[in-house]
Image 1 (cartoon, rainbow, N blue to C red):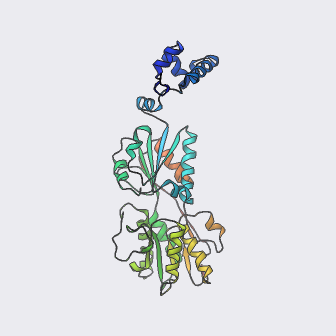
Image 2: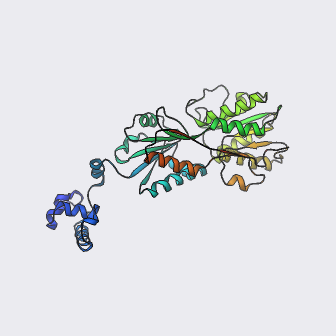
Image 3: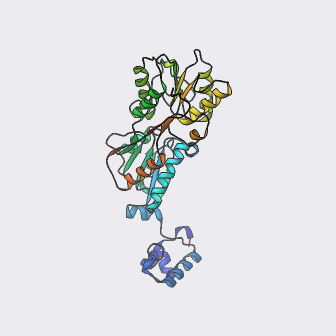
Amino acid sequence: MNKSKLTLKDVALQLGVSTATISNAFNRPDQLSKAKREEILEQCKKIGYSGPNKAAQILRKGTSNIVALVLADSISYMVSDPVASTFIKGVSHALREQGKHLLLYAGDSQSILDVVDFVDGFICYGAPRNPKLVDELSTSVKPVITVDFDIEDTPSINIDNEEAAYQVARFALSEGDQVAILGLRLIDSPSTCRIYDNPLIDVDSSISHRRLDGYLRATHEKNITVSNERVWHLPESDRSFARQAAREVLTSSPRPDVVLCMSDIIALELLQMALDMGIKVPEELKITGFDGIEEGERVRPRLTTICQSSTEKGVRAATALLEQLQDKAVLPFELRQGETVSTS
């Protein structure tokens, strides 16, 4: 008999025991003596049977103890990002504590329908690069919780990105400053560029736009006008994109007095390039970041930024999914007054 097609019934007949005995040996060891279970498992191993079909079990029981974490982008990019990787660790820790397993699912995949039957729910971290996934998640019969973006009538975990951006910008700005903004995914372009008159994307759901709103509110209060040619779009919070943007902003005329960056990765690349060019920070150039990664504390001058606990955000997201909480939670943030903004 083809080993790959052995069924529970086939194995029970070969071993001369009931199907319940075979099933208990694999799934309910407390129902058999240790010796009996070991005997059954050893005989199954000899005939090439590795246990009941897991997919069929999931479909029959309706639960798998697996939670899918839908990432905003490719897995390789997300796990290399210090903010995203810390969030993933938080989710993983919380699930492990409850005996659950984690499945990472790329946000540039074609469809969550590939896995929907085999998971107990979805945590979606950031708006997926493939917008089709958002539509599928919004109609999913499995529990869904979003993080760092919203789906209508779906529970979520966020910080107040607009208020956070407003506070860090207000701290950095003085009337008369020349200001530039290094943003993330503001327009539909795979390259680093100024936004000019290009149409903005995901305006309602994207945290980048909430941060942009916060920056512009602060500049308006200081009577500072920031034109679209002083706002850069970066497709990813990636060091190579950040270096290109930093080079452009530092060689622009007039060179800005303040650069508001939508991530610490971007801000740190800008800081390093400015120092390499002999630009004094913060005397000649003030820089702010966003996220509060550890590297920003180690550099000198220390980065002025918004700190949010990505680990806590991951734990809260996993807990909310498992407990099927339905609220839209807003977590706290902290303004870290580092040394890239003068306090005098």
